[in-house]
Amino acid sequence: MRQTVMSVAILASLALVGNAFAKEPAPKEKPKEMKPITVTAVMAAAAPKLDGDAGDAIWKTAPVTKLKAVKGANFNKGATDATLQVAYDKENIYMLLSFDDKTLSVQRSPYQKQADGSWAKMKDPEDKGGDNDVYYEDKFAVQWNMSVVGFERFGCAISCHGGEPGKPYGNKYNEEAGELSDMWHSKWVRMGHLGQLDDGYVDHTRFDAAKEKNAGRKTDPKTGGGYEDNKLVNGKPEFMSKDAKPANKGGTYWLLAENKVPFDDSKFKAGDEVASIIVAPVVGDRADVKIAGKWAKGKWTYEITRKLVTGSKFDVNFDDLKKSYNFGIALFDNAQVRHAMVEEPLVLQFK
Image 1: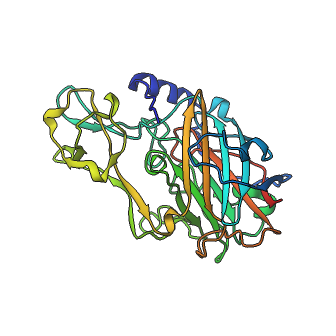
Image 2: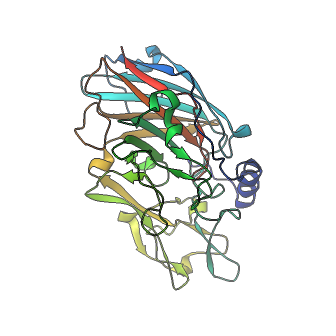
Image 3: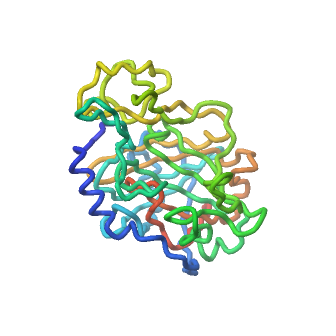
């Protein structure tokens, strides 16, 4: 996929303008009960090709559900329009999700070489910790209810807790022990371009600065792969890509683990940027959900697939196609946590 990366100055100024309202503390408010939106899944005669393209036969006939996500950073007035289609066959569920996003965001907190030869991580100047809306990545999340009381009436907002200490945008958790929801979290720079979505879940864990910084957000078990920081060692990034291309000059804002080599500072000039994240395909339960995405002309289009039944205790299992399944959607425009959300509860029904 072709990367579109704006100059640092332009990107920062646009993001800060989009952030004008979003940096306000998240309000502490109860979720609103809203009329649910039904999403209908239809049987596919042939599985769509997972390539981020809507040209497959099934997407010509599957019902289109129009959605609006609101209250997010960087989107136009905090809102964006989206469409969702769902299909299935004997083994898998397929989703086609599209939403408006004026910029492709891949410049996730890289290191930049300064005029004096030192290296510095590019930061959102208003980020007080875990609240980056300037140098981040585009994301989306789908949260499936497994056992959360009230989810069918309030949607995924029932798991969001703004105005709490510890984080500028609040915490995510379910109220009672035993309440679980399945979280499909797409992170384009860290996993999306590898064809994977970060499969996790939400439980009732409260925030603890020392032990539970993510509160109720957890990831499914894995047996290998994943992402980790490319740390500064003696003031310089520890690793670089073996092709030595700066991220802003034909390289990438992620460093594939298989391509990493010890850093050679002589290869870079002032203004060059280097990825601060090292990535490798995830292996195990955490890699159950596959995706392909394309950004073009101000719009993201994602195709998503997973087995109907995984058997994992951390996953929603679509084992009864006569049942309805409640879920919610959040969309992120270059934002770490300040997502736009579809406020209405969503209900998946298999036709």
